[in-house]
Length: 216
Image (cartoon, rainbow, N blue to C red; front, side, top):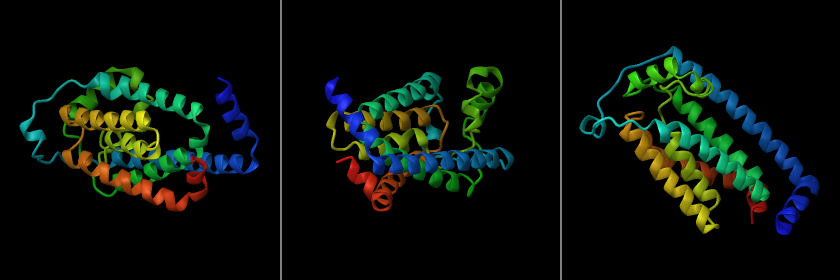
């Protein structure tokens, strides 16, 4: 507990750190705005379901618990980790913002319908508790998979902490497997997410050097 308090005292009393934190929060807020706009566009311009080598040969599984509840729990765990390691907050927020921005751009470039569109329609109309989720996801925001890519990005951010690295890698594999088994993403959405997440991390290291150095 004493060590944790020291971390927060150092973090919240350093003006340079506070400046970088404010910048990261602004970028994160902007990325959420871009995501909202991109999601609206995917609702307005709906394409078609296309063949997929994996989905065409796999049965559809009910993955609601992992797709919704487990994802919400994942966010809570991430918040807890950042509160325990405050030095990681600025870089994590900025990397997340870049991840969301890149995903928003890709979402509006190609318009496809979710492979399991019936599932999204059912959830959106029958499960009112999911209304908040559907303000940031239309079901047609397919490329690329956030369930697979975002935990993979976090694995690189927390790479020096072995337990967290393994945790996020497992979450990434679980997320990717979930959306494939539920036919909620095309296979290209999942497999490309790993490469894009790595690219986002490498760009973030160059663009946000001070925040990256702060984690060390």
